[in-house]
Length: 124
Length: 108
Image 1 (cartoon, rainbow over the protein chains, first blue to last red):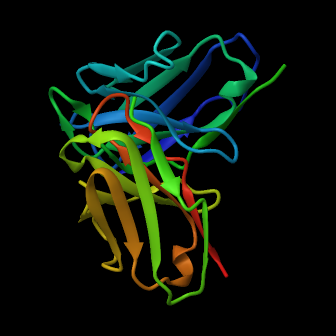
Image 2: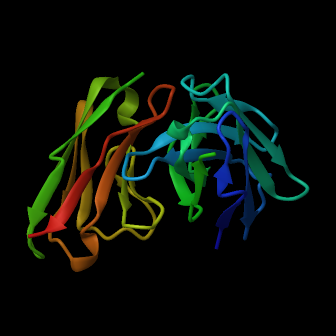
């Protein structure tokens, strides 16, 4: 059974960069899937941050595009998220997930496997 | 960006009753590229429906989705105790991928 696990610091200071890693087990990250990051501020809804293919092709949410970078390390079966210039508004549970289907032109579709999520608090 | 508006915000029902949840898009969602998720407190979302009406693997047939264009519906035919949760719709017809604000189904 495919499993995803987020890891990284739970507390980051304002203006700094958030760095999270998602480790995939029970399957290879190099199969024909996109992978993604979604965040959820406490008590609020879901926001797609971006997605990456194992070859490195990426799609980002324009609302975050200038601050977000997603990368993949196939040798470790991991993909990672970096979000810069943090403010308190970036406090959220961050989920990594597998994209269940995609189109080469349109990009990623829906998310069929999710990690348990990791809360990252931005505070001094 | 396509904005998804879900209604009602909260639905209070009893086990065994039928739940009807709505997701309305600010513009047409191409090819009915709409998914539904269930989220329980402290848990990650779980995919229920994709392609507006296709159930994901392992999802009971009491969950059904329908709709096209700008109006989509998730129906839970007979609520089980484990179905009380928050439900989100998500469109993938155009980038960026966007989610609705959620509908909570609570026990009456």
